[in-house]
Length: 239
Image (tube, rainbow, N blue to C red):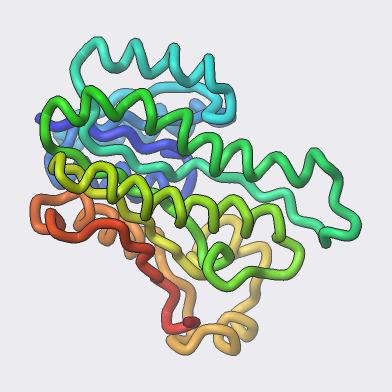
């Protein structure tokens, strides 16, 4: 059974992706940092329906802590699917943005991508099969006011995705990113009302975590073996 690590598995998107991958027959490692109880609940729900899962807790922005956690997980064998979903906002107009606000999304989203993915590569390469999937954002494609830091982090992931895809294409490993637009969940519910969503999105609704998870499931499958180096926009027609 192939193993999949989903960072940020305790959040709305992460939970849906974990459930999708488990339903597809993967052993899912549900990651959390600040909310391990949510990750444990996801793991328990997967196990209750006959799936295979475990929980891991570490800060993706902490390189040493991440490497130590992954070393332990790799003792059980290679992790062949990684979904880099962990992310954070620290929104502010750049004129009033502190250096701490600037660094936080870059440390979690961009440095976290390296901290998690790099230790998994050689074991993955040895199997000649792998899927690296990163959850980006529409903000990384078109920008957004008050999110210069977040846009920089996500756009950096796009470049990393394309470059790493070239490095691994001959090894049976694909590397892709999903750039969702507005997705229903805790953040969307508090930030956008129905009228705003209808005005912004040609499909006149927010996407669902399950729609993002379905795409992640496809990218993790055998059927997506010839798809690599792509930034896939999933945004209801916004771009």
